[in-house]
Length: 271
Image 1 (cartoon, rainbow, N blue to C red):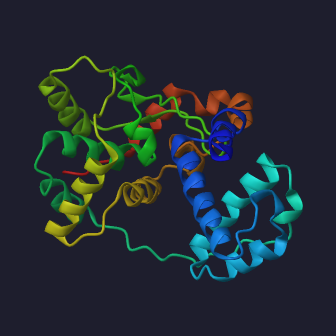
Image 2: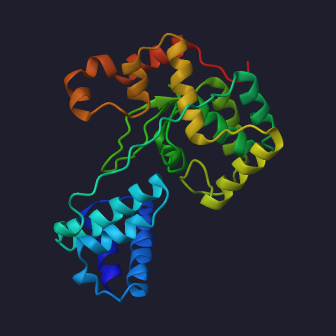
């Protein structure tokens, strides 16, 4: 019953995404299991020392941070017991040195994708710089074909979107994919999470290349910079510009202006 109330709290009060809500519930359940195995401590009787002993057993810095976020959400925000989690610090994150794929490697990965649906998805990530969830949540109505512009309706507590674009290569595959569809759904891409995980895994196995939607987002930013696009415009296309800045400097970030900058860069994947 308490977890159901917490789920509603995450969805309604905190406006967490379904993914974040699910992750929090999963991690809190694991903490409850730990409590049962260590003296069957009542949930509302937990003390800071219990959290300390639990986190001491978490070996991964990444998982430590994930558990701490969920515990803060549950005890501080939901139950109003901030003293249970106060004072704990997030572990330092190691800097990841990523080796980005070359254009030839992107082409090899693209050709390893057997379906037009998958190739269109790949090019959408590579030429727009959008986040994984943003692309998968796109609606047909989010696309302005006259400008090859995307206006994703994606707002969360930590991430926002503005507008981005896709190139003519992506447009060709996307139109072919949509023409092959035999449904009335407004979703631009119809995938389950398991299906997308499988398609990326299979292409990685075929090519030996570690390419993911996140890698393609980073590649987009790096390549657009190399093509002469200033960072502030790359940030706008990737949804990293605060709304307050957009409001004050709209003329600099208008869709028409961004479209001109995008087209001038001449981003290509297959040629």
